[in-house]
Length: 218
Length: 195
Image (tube, rainbow over all chains, first blue to last red; front, side, top):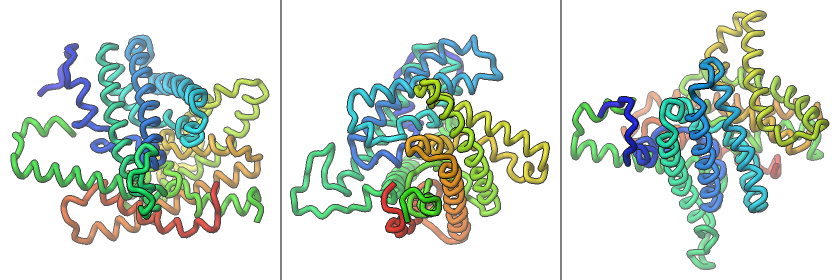
């Protein structure tokens, strides 16, 4: 599958962010918010949606403006575009739910330095048509949100015995508190990566893929 | 110790609320550059240096923003500030200390996207630290980052020689190590008591 410049919009444009190039599990980008705000599923979902919004909006704007931005200052311009949308979402979350705003804290503002967003702006949005850039950004955002939910769900389940604030195990459950504390973030993400690596290794053993397919990555 | 005394702020940010291990800031270099001790230490020092400079500038910028009633521009101002601070530090080092520049050279640009720097600037603003407190906070954050990345590099160097199942090599292993380190640092929690 060659990466030629074609403007066709395919399912692949959206889905690559979901699984094959999942920003968290495959590319290991944007780790800071991934670990910091995933102590409950609801925080994880909010963070994922906020990041998706910034990804899509900045992807659209970068894609529209790319030809007018001089090459030398492009990174600085992208950062300012991203920071603008982050400020927007920061104030929006503050207006919608103050509890959520306090729970996420400075990590909403830190979306600016999330490398996924700058990476997508530079590597994809600036080289593709607006529609394609938006679809791809939405896919990446969905993949990011999915990964955050994987982490947040497991951590909340083990550490507090609930999911989205709904208690699942009844009063007899002894919470595994360390899972909602910082070490739990590292351990749960490590465990997910182990699981995915193991699955990948197994599927590679069962059906060795032809050489051409693997050249796709890096 | 009072919660806003300088020694308390320093100890708290180095140990109890370590930027990397308790607050998850600056994980990219923590996972990426911690392969060897000889690169981990310069990275830590360079980051500490940039932290001090940008904390100082952020303090000044924030005063100006508040005076002009344009706090909503804070984020954009800080990001631009950090990018230019890194650039300035790089130029100054090249001019006045070529040896140090050669040692830190490749790490400096990477620091711009280190969220620990922006996080530091934002946190010191939220906490309303004065000038001396901001500086000590930045120093503590830098020392804490260096400590974490050096410890991690030491552990990874040891593990590189041991036999591991092939699945667990790579990022998963680093994260597990990070988890154990973080668990160890939780022992200091009694020192700090929240943040």
